[in-house]
Image 1 (spheres, helix red, strand yellow):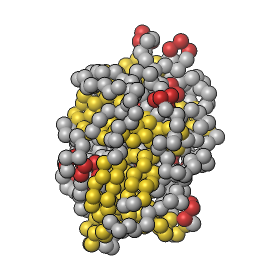
Image 2 (tube, helix red, strand yellow):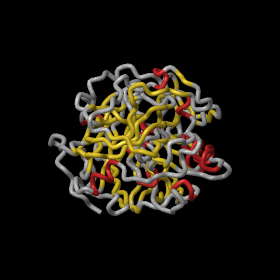
Image 3 (cartoon, helix red, strand yellow):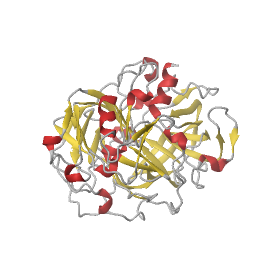
Image 4 (cartoon, one colour):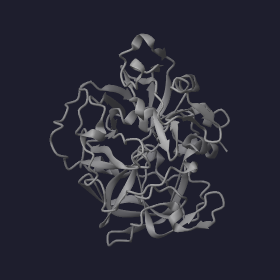
Length: 441
């Protein structure tokens, strides 16, 4: 399926927002105006709520619920103050759980602007309690998945151990935009590549109802969004409905790097292996590691030069930061999308890990979820289409989104992202493991 390619020489439209990459290119933030204040919020296609941390929020330890110093949550010092357009929602509580923490507080109506589109009276969460999840730059998160994952809960006395259940489902920001006729019912994302040893930089584009201004193939691979398998019915309020951006992956192709160097194409197809076993996975811009079947991940990780080694304490494959990555591609629809080798190695402070981990290694009582994270999104234009309940993928032609615009001036909120701490070890408490432990336990 071919979509019209936009002229990549034009300036950004009102509905495309540049993003800021932080934490060595693993977190992607965008400017969002809440009331009369503008914040950097993390862009996350693996959840559905927009929330912002409130001035005076309480930073807590997730295990003990004991209060921590506010700075340990690592949010920006620029936090939300109640505005004239704020209206708290009675008898509802905001409470969301992610792989690396929880946030709770009030539900409220507030005016929100993203990508030049303003929604008045949008339902959002106000973060009043949070475990450490910030990147030193952002003040919250914007979720872009289906409404079934929204995290409002009826009542005012809600335990933070029950945030996955008993949801008061509502329309998230982008859904409200297209329901009100403000934008076509799809958004698209392409993520930029951050050079090794660079803690922050230009992060790519989030485009609302249009395609991002990057060179890409006119040929899109189209796949339907499916109901996510393996999650309990009460996770989606007792209904089998779309929740995550789950799609079928037809197979994976991998092998040695072409000509002894990192490869992002199939030029050496004669030396490649294809595993044609299909599996379901959901696309998650908030997850910097992809969790895929061990039958795919394990042989690929052994093909790094020198080979990666599995570290059980990290639940990850540790690799030399200067290693040569193998060729790797995922078959989606009628195309195979290969990864640039640099996207298969992620820097975590002083060490590096591969960006591929087996989903079985983080399963709970045999329940497995596969996740396609940031690595793929640095190599494609991905279209998330609510109107047709489908996803579309197109290969980036230059595969160097970061080179298109290395300036962060258009995506920052006036705060310097220069000092970004290495990723916390808790970030390696990978989301599938935590999610499944809560769902099934």
